[in-house]
Amino acid sequence: MTGPRRSEGGRGSGHGDRRGSRSRPGPPPRGRTPARPPSDPDPARAAAYELLTAVRERDAYANLAMPSILRRHRLSGRDAALATELGYGTCRARGLLDAIIEACADRPLNKIEAPLIDAMRLGAYQLLRTRIPPHAAVDSSVELVRPSAGSRSAGFVNAILRKVGERTQAQWVAALAPDAAKDPVGHLAFAHAHPRWIAQAFADALQGSTEELAALLTADDARPTVHLLARPGEISAEELALTCGGEESPYSPYGVRLDAGGDPGGLDAVTEGLAVVMDEGSQLVALGLADAPLVGEDTGRWLDLCAGPGGKATALGALVAMDGGQLDAVESAEHRAELVRKATAGLPVTVHLADGRDAPLPEGAYDRVLVDVPCTGLGALRRRPEARWRRQPSDVAGLTALQRELLKAALRHVRVGGVVGYATCSPHVAETHAVVSGVLRGRNDVEQLDATAVLAKVPDLGAGPAAQLWPHRHGTDAMFLALLRRV
Image 1 (cartoon, one colour):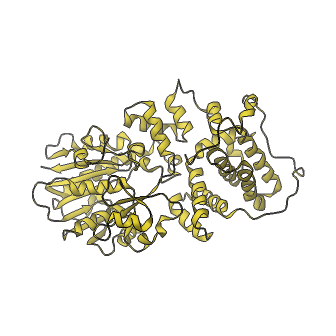
Image 2: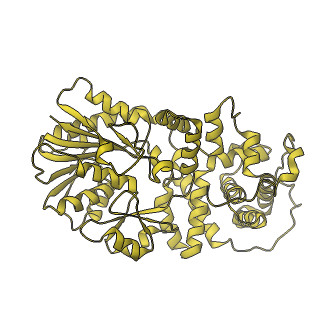
């Protein structure tokens, strides 16, 4: 969550007798809403509202859509940071907000016009999860719908949001969440705005207490800091930190953490090609593969088998270039292959448009192979705020079948004595340990290395041999890395 909230003993504390009420406000009768002069919506909130519309109507990815929206509204600095916070935060908390809005309405959400729901979500987020004054949260949300939907609908939004604002988030959770004693995972999932099945997948991966699950969900529900990769051979992390006002990362020698809103792609260091926006967990995956012990000489022939959109290919290409090596990067989608070409421009990287499962590249030829497989992305929900509400449990089976095929292909391309790095941006057991153990079962030509030893400077990576990063332990995405060596 973002920032300290109003105290639970303040706003809403005088409405405890309304908790059991079934009275719900509906749209006011036509003609009874007082006429108000039109006003222009606040630009930051208008940008956030546009993002919600794009996510709903076009299935847009919030982190990809927001930069262009900010530019279109000519927002920068604090206004851009506010728009980003409101847009991303509302996407992230959608399930929780919807449950509260529906509890305040006289009909299910599927009977309410979608643009009104978006405005109410945005207003409810401000009321429950920010320090924005209630009148500003309500009035600004009403003005978003008044020009297109009219005064009657604006009055409906106003009535619902005033009802939402009668309680704090904690009071709404107490009223609506599953019982904490009977269903602790369900209670935590509701309180921290996660689908229950995702919270359960996290609990299974942690194999720990509900206290640690709560810590993970809290971290996963918060606005992440910006992580930068100082391109190896171009600039040091120390120099980059001084340039952009950030701090050197605790684990990656090339990482910088920057607490900033808006569009990090607009930073001078990024536009000049000195830095790449890249989570520190992804950096550690690339470094883990690069540092893994080989048997025999490293000839500098490396392969990235699932390279799009190009972040890890950039890191690996820069690292192998320092020793005069070459990286082949495979991507099956043309638009993502083009992103890899742009990201790795100037590096010794050759991009191949092909399916990683049957790429036309030599087998048994590469010293190091990264296979960062397509996955549910449950480990990066902080950075992909809408993703938790799009993914379904049924997605997992199809992805794990693809993951097994890609790992087998990677093992065909690596030479004897070489290392494959199997990585996912998901901690789901079915996508991590189960895939690796399933592929290795019955094979005597592969040994699993201790990835926690290779990443020895990073604490709390689990019992090994695979390494699991976590937002609440490391401040990174929940990246998984297994290192496999051909024998």
